Length: 180
Image 1: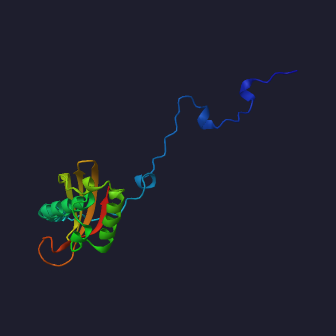
Image 2 (image 1 turned 180 degrees about the vertical axis):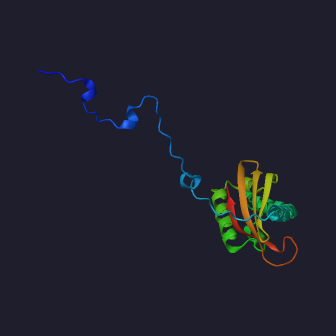
Image 3 (image 1 turned 45 degrees about the vertical axis):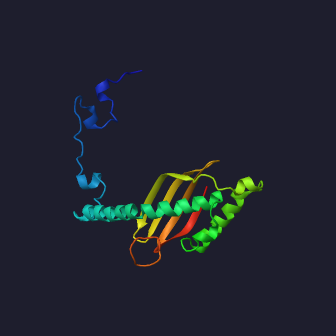
């Protein structure tokens, strides 16, 4: 058997890989191929933030102006729930759904009466933590905690403007009521 020298054996490796220390140049691709396409930019109105702040300031002023109205209304609702006032007294200030909710809550709160001692008027319920949030120029939501002699409860109401007059009790009406 004869041995052929290594130099005569054909090599299957490409010529560029046979060179020691030769590194092929990387292919440089343009950035447009690599990066995602740019999004269309929306023009920003520099006065938009100021307009939003002015609108929020107007809503805050409305909420502050309606705070006494909300205080009187929720105090009256708390008196009805405590049995010191009939629900019909609040008819002009409550919408039909809110009045029906108040009557149902009054029936639940009354439960079985225990004679003359439950008919005696007790101390007024105190409102604590009244919050008024204006949702728009014609709608406000109000939340308060009522501390009564027997229990603490939450009251929430949605007030809506019924006319175009100033913010007084005759022009705002509770359209929804959530007694807790």
